[in-house]
Length: 477
Image: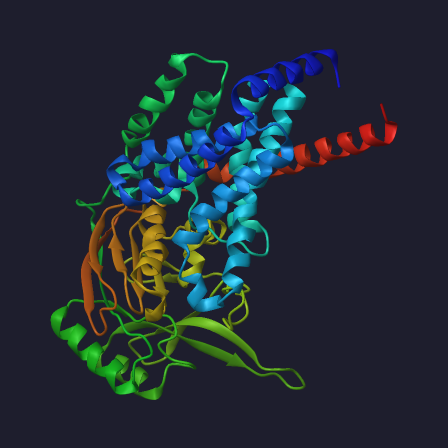
C-alpha cells in the first residue's frame, strides 16, 4: 500500500473507532435500513426518500470495525428485506425458502464489504465515488447474470413508476437506484457536516421531475386489444370467454390469454374460433418437440393464432423459472409485424430481465405484450410484486405494455408508466380491453450502457483487493 493509502486507511480507522464501530450502532443501522425499506414499500408517496434513507444506513455499515462485520451487516439487511417481502417462497419451496433468502441477501453483504475495502485501500472520497457504480454492477449480477438471477426488490423496483417515469425513461431502473446510492453515500460520510443532507433531500424531487415519454394521446396508430384472466381453464371456458370478450370489445384486433392456458399446442376448437371470427389470439401453451433418438424437448411458448386458424408465430420463454419444470430457454426472439405495428412478445418471468426486453426494443417493438401466470395460491402480495415491473418497463422504453396474467394483476400501461386499466386478484374470467396508441419505437435508458462496465469494475476490484490481501499475508509483517 502506498503512503497516501496508508494515511487514508488510518484516518478511516480513527473515524470507525470513534463513531461507527460499536455493536449497538451496527445493530441500529441494520434495523433502520430494513425498516425504512419496508416503509418505502408501504408508503409510495415518500418511497424515494425512504429508500434513500434505507441506503444511508446500509452504507453506514461500512464503518464496522472489520470487513467481516460489515459483510454480516449487509447480509442481515438483505435477509430482513427479502424474507418478509418474499414470504410466499415458503409456499413454493418449503424450508428451502430460507436458503434462497440468504442467497439473494448475500449480495447486500458483498456490496457493503467491498465498499469498506475500497475505502480502506483508496480513501473515503474514492469509496463514496465508487459506491453507485459498485451497486449497479453487483445488482446487475444479482438480478440478471448469476444462476439464481432474481430482479425483484432492487431500489428502483420500490418506486411508483407513474411518478418516477421520467427517471426510469432516462436513467433506467438500475440507474435510478445508482443515483440514490450516490446521494446515500454522500449522506453516510461521517466526515461531512449537516450540508451532506442537502443532496439526499432534493435528489428524489429532481428525479421525479424528469420528463417522461410521450403517453401517445395524439398518436395516429392504434391497436385494439383484449384479454381474459384464467388459471388452468377448461377448454369450453376458453371459448366462452373469447365470445364474451368479442361481445364486449367487438373492435378488438387481438385477444390475449395467459401463459399455460394449454399444456400443449392450441387445440382445434381455438383455431376454428379464430377462423370463424377472423381474429388473432395470443395464447400460452407448451411446444413439445421429439426428434429421432432424442428425449422430448419442451418449450413454454406463446402461440399466435391468426385469422386463418393457423399458427402465425411462436415465441418461447427466454428465461424459464429456476427450480421449476418451465421448459427450455428460447433460442431466438422475433417480433410480430401486426397490421398496426411491431409487437414484442415476452412470457411472464422474461419481463424481469432488461437484457431480454432490450432485445425487443432494439428490434423496433412499438408494443410489448406479456402473457403471464402467477399461481393463485401464492397470494395477492406475490401477484403485486410480480406485476410491479410492467409499468417500470413501459416507462423505461417509452412504449405501451400489456401484461395479461392468469389470476391478476393484468395491466395495460401507457408509455409514461401510468396504469390505464387493471384486473385484480384472482379475477377468474374477468376481461380487460383497451384501444392502445402506438407512439413509435422505444429506446433503452442510459444504464444499459453502464451495466456490464460496472459489473466488470466490481469483479476487478474484488479480484485485486483479494489478491493484494493474499500477497500481504504471504509476505508477512
